[in-house]
Each structure stands twice: as C-alpha cells, then as structure tokens.
Length: 488
Image 1 (cartoon, helix red, strand yellow):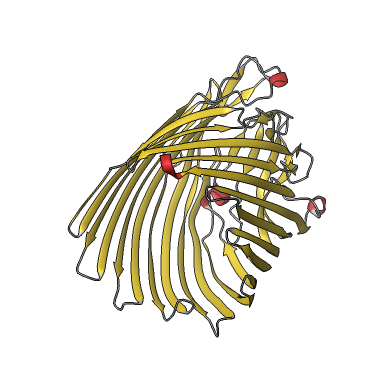
Image 2: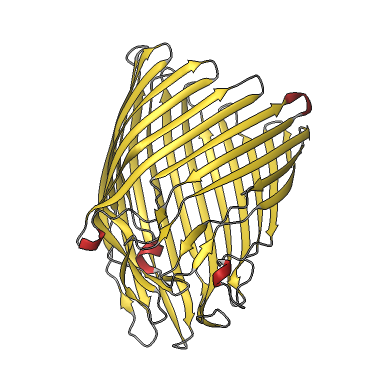
C-alpha cells in the first residue's frame, strides 16, 4: 500500500507465507521420529519519503521479520526474528553530483534445538538448545559521486559498522549452559572512477582501504574456566582495474584484475553449531581472506534481441576459511573446525545468451564451468580436493511468453546442477540433478497480480546433503504455490 502527497510519500508492505513442507530424510532411511519440515514467516515494511527543498530527499525505512520452522523431528525446530531501521539522505549540490548519507541499525535473534536420534530413527533425545543467539549492528555510509559524462564519473566514500553477537545454549548431557560471543568494528574508505578516452575505450579503477578489529571474544564452556580471547586488528587494502573496448558496432571485449578481502564473521570466530551428529567448531584465530582475481570477456550483440556473453576467470583466495574435518563424534558423525586454508583456487568459464524469438517470446540460457580446488594447505589430505558444495558444471534454460493484451505472463525454467561434494575430504558425493520449474503471472489491474507456480515439475528425487553417518537429506519434491499481490 502506498500514498503520495506534495513532496512526500509513504508505502506499507507485508508478506505472509506458510508451507507444510516435506520429510527430508530419504524414504529408505526414515523412522518414526521423521516428520515434515513445515515453515511459516511474516515480513512487514514501512517506507517514508520527504522532499526537503529542490535538491534534498530524506528516506526512512523500517522492516521486521519473523520465522518459525520445524527441522524434521518432534524435538528439533528453530525460530528467528530481525528488525531494521534505515535512514538515507540524498543531496544534489550540482545537476551531475549526488551526496548520500546512510545510517542504519539492525537487531536479530535466533533459537534452535538439536537432538540425537538412534540408529533405526525410532527415538530421539534433546542434546542442545540454542535458546538465544542475539546480534546487533549499527553503521553508516557516505558517498559523493560526480558524473562528467555518461562514460566518465568518480566517487569517494567512507563507511563503518560495529557488530555485537553471542550464542547462549544449554548442553543437556552436561546439564549446563555454554556461551560465546564477541564484537567487530569495521571502517573503510574508497575512491573509484571511470573514464572513456574515446568512443572505443572505457577504463575503470577503484582503491579501498579497510580497518578491521575483533574484540571482546569469549567462550564459557560448562565446568571450564571462562576463556577470554585477545583483541586483534588489521588494515587491509584492495584495488581493482578494468577496461572495455568496442571492436565493432556489435562486439565488445572486456578485462579486469581485482583484489578483495573478507573478514571472518562472529559465527566463524566464536559460535559452534551442530547438524545431526556432525559438529562444527568455531575458531577465534581466523584472519581475513584475501582474493586476487582476473577475468576477460567477449560480448556479441548478434541482432536485435539476441546477445551472447562469454567470460573466463581465475581467482585465488589466500587464508580461505573452510570447515576442515579433524575427528569424529561418539555418535558416528564428523567433527569439523573452521580453519584458514593456505590457498584455494577457482577458474572457469561462464556463458550467457538471450534471444528474442518474437514480439512476445524470449529464450535465455546460461552455462558455468567452475573448477574450484584447494591448491595449497598444511593438511596434505586437502590438496587438490574440490571445494565443498561447488558443482563443476551448472546451467539453465528459460523461456518467457508474454500476452500483453490480457497482462498474462508465463515462464518456464530448466535448471541443471552437476555433481558436487558435501565435505572437505570429498568422501560424500552428491550427484547432479535436473529441475523443471514454471510460473504463471496474471495482472488484471495495476494494483493486483495473481501468481501460480510449480517447482520440481517432474518430481525428481535429488539429495541436498549427506551427514557423517551417511544420512541422506533430500531437496524439495514437486511443490505448488499460489500468491496474490495487492498494492495501492
């Protein structure tokens, strides 16, 4: 729902969703404790805009989210909630310039339970209750951008963020609580620009420097003295450069070299978790990941409505954060810890294409070959192993048909994902699968839209996970859904 007056506007949005779900455990492994993984969630948003003079716009946005989910057995479930406030001020000092200031605050909480299930899955026992995982974040962003021409512009910016999070849980076999948490401070500055030296060449570059601080980390284990982790801080610089050249009226080439970094999250540093009998431990010694990448591409516009894009790439990530197997549990699962692997390497090719087959019919397709492996590690067993949950081959083909006269649109999509491994040692293989989806959208007016869709039309069975005990969990079966969107 939206309304607008002279110099101001307001919009209210909401969404409700509920699904019975399905039994995720493979039929031949199911027992009496297995049940459907139902879910429900609600989302609400409020947006307000106010024009402050001819060149200034103030925007306020608030949002709230809540979800509850059954995790497949009577004793396992989770719930989460998130609330956010965002204020943005945009000022246009000149016709080709804009200054933006963003301020935001976020608050989240999460709860989840875990159980131990016996061999024939006839009984379960509650082993862990993460009764609260609260987190808060506040931050800001400032950007000044100036455009000289359509191809030439520059911008400078400053941003910062502070995050605080904890996990609070009850370990039932020890009849005691466990707590862990910490905080992070991030501050960054950047400058970037783009320039076209002629109609044939466009150059772009960017430079960024960031400060990262991790502090107040702690772990309180049952019947063990509280651990306090030392504060850590680091400055990290990154840069990017690229070029795009026009070879003809319909042919373009492009190339880029870039650096990036990612700091470990509070979850990776301090929060352990468990899935079935598999346990994953945190690691307060983790440092930032650093990436160096190269790519080159060729774009063809074959005719009106037809285009093909080809990109080859190669990336190397130093100190890549992975879940590394370090042992096994008494229940037969695996114990893994988040560790920094010396270097992971990814290279491959991506192809995207689209064709307009008529006034109302559009065909599109994509294919990706991704060779992602551990190139160097202090753990010899990991070297040359493929990265977990990264398929070497994937692709999709989509068809969209639009009947403008009656505002009816139909979409069909065929998606294929190749085989991949669930774990770091490449012992749990997930085979590839093919999925067919469809969507029908009807808009009888500007304010109403009716949607009806189906996923996994062929009702193919495919695994999306394998635990250390060999328990196979399945992706969603054929699913029908209907939705109604109303806006005013």
